[in-house]
Image: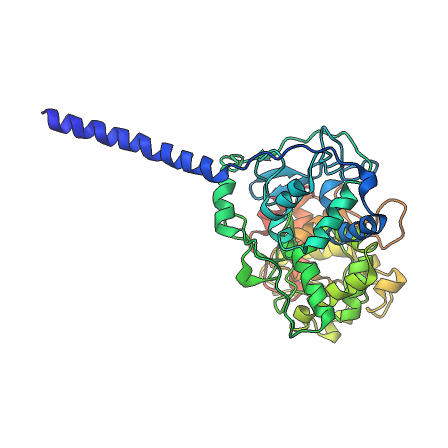
Length: 437
């Protein structure tokens, strides 16, 4: 009788020991030493290096995640919505108490390449260190010089709100072991210099794939589906390759216009998170933005046109009498004629929208062709407007005008009669569960 009881005790101790050993292993693997705080003197940086860092910060869209209040640039606070919860952009001004003012260059580089803060805690990959890790050394130094010469702003970090167990930082150790590739950027020397420059910027600094490439269950990019379309907050970020849902083909010139202004002839204006990208790229070096356009257009040029010229110019028709969802389509068409047609069917040739300010024919709006309706719902609900005080095309929001039934019917109607596409699955749930961006 004693032997079975002893075996049970051994099993109990083994069951308790295995999790403990795993926890110790995780602690050992995640441990990173705190680096010595070093007060940084802004005057020691060369002005040319700082200027170069300013241009790189624009190309990296640093402000889009680290500036919540334009009066307090780079002081953090931007709420980043992820499938795992909300993460807030950090204060990256040189404030000694709440920012990075005591970070040596070694601490800064470690954060950018390995996702480890100066005090040793692991950073969430919502901060795109898996991209920044491939930055060239001189670019990293220029960014450091720029950030350390910004006005210091005292702004304590806002609390992240992540679902269990994703708020447990030791898990990031295993994430990094699985997914972080710290190998340096390797140029494709078979390509022209402009393409090479664009590839480096788009992948290492501007991190285009962070939004436009799909992710797996644990949030890592699916590198086998580069630029196949992904997520940005609660918006769909369309594919930028042969799978692009754009109804109109992109020329390189149109793409360059879009990246610098948010508007291009024959294409919809930038909305949602892309507006912040455009604001940064508008002030970035034109030759670098042109290089990004060259690189991305090499993928977009593979996509077929999805809307015929005849349909692009035609007015949207009332629903057919034999439509299997006739009641909803009639409500959608009525909503369209009430809220949309006066602008989107105004007299123009369908190609002058970017320059004339006229609204685009909706048959040319990419949101109708996306694989899910979230971007269209956000645009109709909240509208699109240029930043305060700036000129640009405006799309009014209809949040106070359209109820859920009208919004659902309008989206269903536009999908069928505007895009000529199959119904979106789960449209009703998307309307009910949409989040304010």
